[in-house]
Length: 219
Image (cartoon, rainbow, N blue to C red; front, side, top):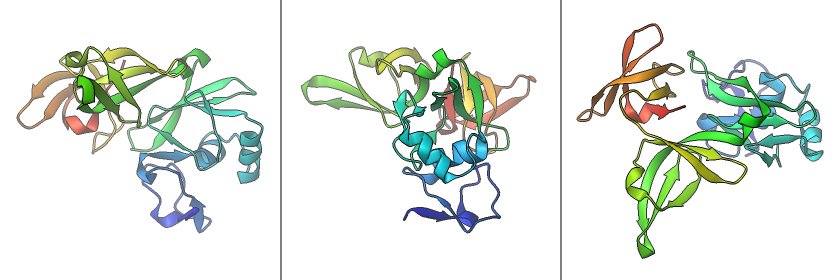
């Protein structure tokens, strides 16, 4: 289906549930991101309607993660970067403390980097090791023991290589992307390996307990 009924849109989409009957359906899982049409028209107010968004895409003026957007249904996921070529403005998709997707302004050079979580690690034929990332990317790596599930990596979107590993450990900075503490940044203070829960100290010194599956290590 090309459209989605407005009353069943995900709660993390920052658009009203009342209005037109249908909204655009994204190309990936609807709860994991927002389609470029919603991003440009409703969130950033860079277009009046679908026609203007399609025209910008046709003229090759919109990039996600340093790749040209091909369709207004293409989806932006958490920490994806969006660049508008005419104005040279760049944004990163994040979440606020109300659990809604939002954009933060970033410098143009920052649009070439993205943080992603290691969600799986596999040994392939020939004893090669592959790590699978939260945004769908997969990488064959040499120093396999140094990468663990739930660590994060910084991907250089220009050369499509891993630039840095961000280890999940005490003192690491993390972002909560799911659950009742969604949208909060903090530092890991305690680790409960048995229950897979992490004690996170927020900026106001409050400590919260979060499941590791709800966390992503950030810079």
